[in-house]
Length: 53
Image 1 (tube, rainbow, N blue to C red):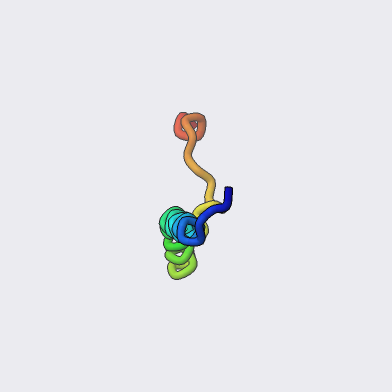
Image 2: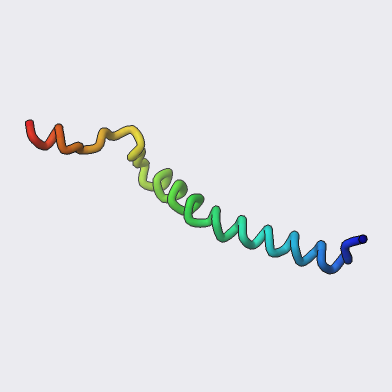
């Protein structure tokens, strides 16, 4: 059974939109970090053990 060309286009379009919507916040966040010059993944986080000291 062959898939209709319009159905194939719709599936590709919907998949592209879904990937765009999923990736947009990540790209914006990384862009913001680059703009501000921040690298929060290099900072140590506070843990309960560190707070007790």
